[in-house]
Amino acid sequence: MLTFLKRFLSFPSDKKTRYIRDAQGRIVIHHGVNISNYSKHSGPPGETRPRAGHPWHGEQEAANLQAWGFNLVRYLVHWEAIEPTRGTYNEAYLDRVIEDIEMYGRHGIEVVVDFHQDLFAQKFHGNGFPEWAAIDNGKPFKLQEPWAMNYFQPAVKESFKNFWKNKDGLLDSYIAAVEHVYLKVRTCSNVLGVDVMNEPWPEGWFLTFERTDLSNFYDRLKEVWLKHGNGYPYLMFEPWMSTSAGYPTNLRMDNERFIGAVYMPHYYDFFCEQGKPYGWFNKIAMKRALNIRCSEAQEFKCPMIFGEFRFPVVSKNYREAFSDFYQLCDEHSVGWTYWSYDKLVHNDRGLINDDGTPASNSILFDLVRIYPKRIVGEGARYGFDGNVFTMSWKSTGDCGLVEIYVPAAWDVVIETENPYRVSGDTLFVTSYPKGCKNKVTVTVKSKNGFPQ
Image 1 (cartoon, rainbow, N blue to C red):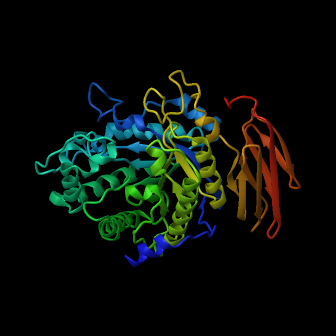
Image 2 (image 1 turned 180 degrees about the horizontal axis):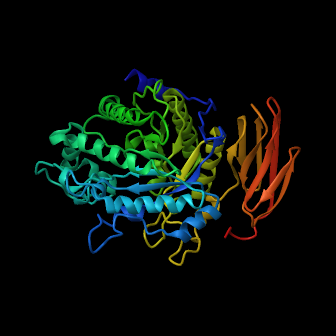
Image 3 (image 1 turned 90 degrees about the vertical axis):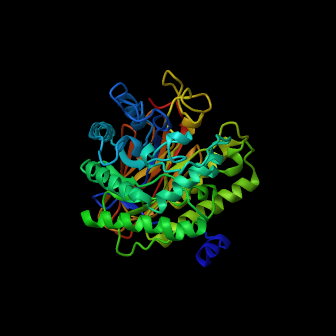
C-alpha cells in the first residue's frame, strides 16, 4: 500500500531511460503496430478453418510496415489456439506463427509474441483462454455494454479467481504453455520477446492482486527464463488492465539478477474512450501517466515499450492527443506499438480501407514519423513536431552510424556537422568518437504523398 501511495502522490519528471540495445550495443527505438484485433475473434483453428486464430496479414502488409518505418510488431497468440485440448499443443498453429514471424524478419521487423486475453474466454464474448480453463462453477453471465463491464460478471470473476488460485493446476498449465511457446519462438532471430499476458485482471482487490498474485506469477516466469538463459528474448510484463488509464501499479518487480525483463504497459485515455473530447485536463493526465510509467520502469530496472495505445476518432481533438502522446514518448525515448493494424471493416481502430489504402481519418499518416531507429551513444534527445526533427546525443565509444527513419518520398533538408548519407528511407549519420556531442536537424519541406 505504501509503495502504491508513493507512486500515486508523486509527479516524477526524470527523463532517465533504460534502453533496449542490439547486438552491437546500439540503442534501439521501436515504433510499431499490433497484429491484430482481427485474430482475437476468428476463433481457434480447425480442419475447416486452418487460418483461424491468426491475423489476415501477408507479405504485402509486412512490406507496407517496412515502408512506413515500423520496426516492431506485437503479434497476438491465443492460449485457446495453442492448447485447445488440455495437455496437447497445436504445433500446426505454432508453425504458422513461426512462418509469420519469419516473414516480418525478412522486412527488418522485430516481433513481440503476445499471449492475448480479453474477458478470459470466448464463452464470455472475449478471447484468449481455452474453454476447458474457464471454470466458472455455474456462476451467471449476462452480456454488458461497454464491453469492459463484463469483467464484473460473476462467471468471469469466478473464472479469474480459479485461475489465479491455480485450481486444478490452471496456472501451472498456462505457465507451461508460455514456456513451450517461448522455446519455440526464441529460435527466430527477430523475436524481441514474449509478452506473457495481455492486460491481467484481478480475482480480488487490485492492490493486493498486483502485489501478490501478479508479482508471484511474473516471478515464476522469470524462473522459466533463468532456466533457459537469462536475457534475450525478453520477458515482457504488464500491470493490471486499469492502469492503462494512467494509474500507478502496485507490482513488486525485483530485476537485480534478472536482466531479461521489459515493462510493457498500455495507455488509453479513460474519457476519450467514452467519446469525450481531448482537452487541457487530458493533456495533464497524459503527461503524469507517462512520467509515472517511466519512473516505474526505472524502479523495475528495465526498459519500457508502450504495448498498446490509441485515441478514438470520434473523440474531439483526437489528433492533438496522438501528437501529445508521440512527443511525450520522444521526450522519454520510449517506443510504442499502436492498436491495431487492421482494416476499418474489421474494427473502428483500423488504419486502412478494405482495398489497403490509408483510411481517411489520417491516423496512419500521423503514425508515420521521423525517428531514430538505432543510436550510437548516450543521452539522446529527439523530437518531431510534424515539420522539423531534431536530435542530439553524446558519443561514448568508437565511431558508428546512427540510423534515422526518413520517408524516401518526403522532400527534406538535412543539417548536421557530422558526415551522413541517405539510403532509401534511412538517414545514416556518423557518431563521432567518445566525448563528442552530435546533432542533426531534418526539416520537412513537403511530404509528397504517403510513403509507398
